[in-house]
Image (cartoon, rainbow, N blue to C red; front, side, top):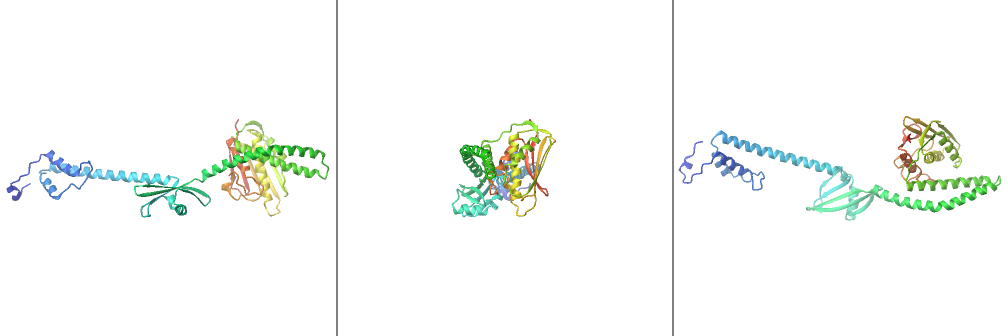
Length: 381
């Protein structure tokens, strides 16, 4: 490179730079004292002077390599930033919380998808200055507020399940206590009713029989309540499915209903492993529910209940079919203490589900033309 006359005649000559010095000088322009790539150190005059010292292709090659490293590092930093940003956003989205991040002026800096669906929850919580529990659409939310780096972070957590468990635990304890206290006097009344039946005449005998049916129903509720509160453990023994059919027919005589109903029992005479007492309770619950569903119909249509039991592969299968009223709230079908029946207590199906699970089984409401419940339990000792 040919030097200009101005530079040639100047009394101050630049020191000659070796190749390694040239590269390090350029590198120094690209790096600050914290080792972070920066273009702030570039000054036009210094850059021109430096480029004049690159007198051959080899020097230019080193310059290009340094520029390439700078570009590659910039791309790498940008990619890492985008990856981390995507990761943080994904984590925030899968959190089971509505999250709002607000600026100091009250505008929204960020909202996740749950927050976008929870405007009313936010507005209700805002009226109470956050850090509170609120009720919205039959759900409970815990709203909390924190501050960091000039931002307000508000979260709303759905605690409905936790509240429900607390409520059920409380109700279970109260119910168990009441059942225990009622059990003894009911037992005494039942004994007296048996004695009264022996001495009753033809006119009073039907009244005493109805009294016994009512007492039997109370005893059944007490037994179900105590079982539900204590937990279920199945004691399986090998026996014929026909034994359950006989038990159901006896239980049917203890239940009061007014409509004309046909009962069809089709139980296989095969043997399987199950807890006789517990499965008897389950089938009684479904039988009585079917009767109540028929009783709830306003039409005087002939009622029909069909119960089948058979062994299918490794399962014992029970089906209960009736032409009564359809199930109204399927989502709350097995919820404890939830019932739409006037004489129901909301424990029958919840207890039945516990018993079936203790037998490693399942209960399903089939999507058939007829209302059909299917119960499957594992046929194992």
